[in-house]
Length: 218
Ligand code: CDP
Image (cartoon, rainbow, N blue to C red; front, side, top):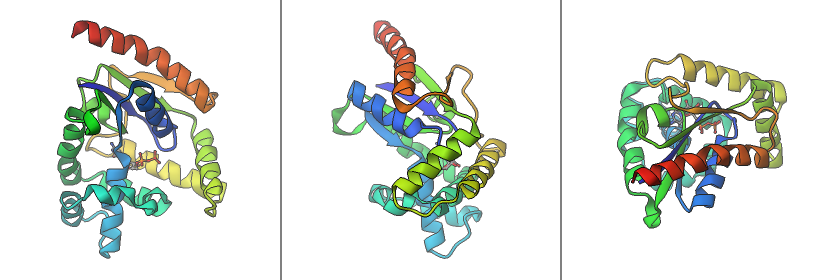
């Protein structure tokens, strides 16, 4: 199975890129952030604390793929709770198998899969033939997320969005369990000065030769 692993900080554009790469190659796509968002939201809905490891691990084990379609997953409440539950080793362990199974047997008989998240290249799919770490300056990322919220008709204040991203990045990078950082063999793609089309072309320049080399190796 051919895997494209995409990691990076919040609102770096990795989701858009992952979707476009999946379409380009006819691969399946898994936004692994949704798994952590769904777990975080489930804990909040049960009136629990997203830092309670037992409660969060129970929610992770009970996760139903249908939960991943909940529009509330896109909100900031889900994002912050996601980054709290994501720091708990028992939660990461409970979600590992789902991600590995998706990579090994992508739905609809697809010939490969694109997974995006924080630890895909380093932990979930360390043998992926191509790994990208998509990043951008935090102010650029906050602007993008702010615009995205306004476009969705959600209320948004730029300064709050920036603060929330900084808080989440700091937690994701500092945690002991699978901290956010590029895998040793990842290509770092800084999209600060790129629009989505430019980022896609830059990614293709990295991905196409890597996939060609992987298919030659058999
Ligand atoms: O879309 P955005 O980049 O804002 O975030 P996301 O990818 O939906 O991830 C939400 C949170 O889940 C992150 O802040 C991480 O704490 C966590 N996460 C993780 O730890 N590992 C992953 N593979 C994906 C997400």
